[in-house]
Amino acid sequence: MKHITLEICATSVASCIAAETGGADRIELCDNLLEGGTTPSYGMIAAVRENCSLKIYPIIRPRGGDFLYDYAEFDIMKRDIAACKILGCDGVVIGLLTAEGKVDVPRTRELVELAKPMGVTFHRAFDMTDDPCQALEDVIAAGCERILTSGQRNTALEGASLIRELVEKAGNRIRIMAGSGLRAHNAEELAKASGAPEYHSTARDYVDSGMTYRNPNVSMGGIPGVPEYGISVTQAPIVRAIREGAEKGLNA
Image (cartoon, rainbow, N blue to C red):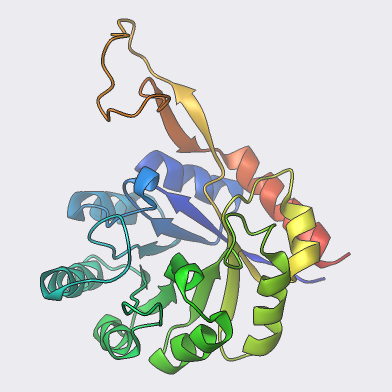
């Protein structure tokens, strides 16, 4: 029977504990998921390391937006990788592109070398490249151990055919991890369609806030519809269901 590797994208200690309880293999630790994920704080990484025994890979992303970084931002990324090493992380998650939509191989390789002996995942910046097959070769050349991708579509299920192609082209050279829009109800379908060995999800649900007074006239983020009185937390039963569904699909 084939077994998957399941990574949970988590933003809190509670989510990391739930991921471990549910049987996840690894944590991608993030902040600001509404911006696609940015680097979590030193305090957050330290607290998760103390409370969770799973492999922890913080994302190294100094801001939201594109993946074209200036000198100051690249310097921040290097400092954050050094901090992750001090805190005992198992790896980091990065993604750097050129203005032309290519993988920034020299800078990626520099961060990979700086991160050693930690592992390095190249995140969904991959999905913003102009040529995914060339990007695959470039990420391999830069020394990363895996690529997180939705198959250059909004969800991994929509991009499953490209993910399967990448899995085949990658062979044993690099791991392909399917992610974006992965839920318990579509895990089996995605695994059947993509054949990916690794999967990535938040496995989250909203937990209602304990606030009894709720001001209806103010949105702190200024974005209507954002659930400010709900906290997004990974749920252990959802983690289990995703693993069961994906492994069923991979072995169908």
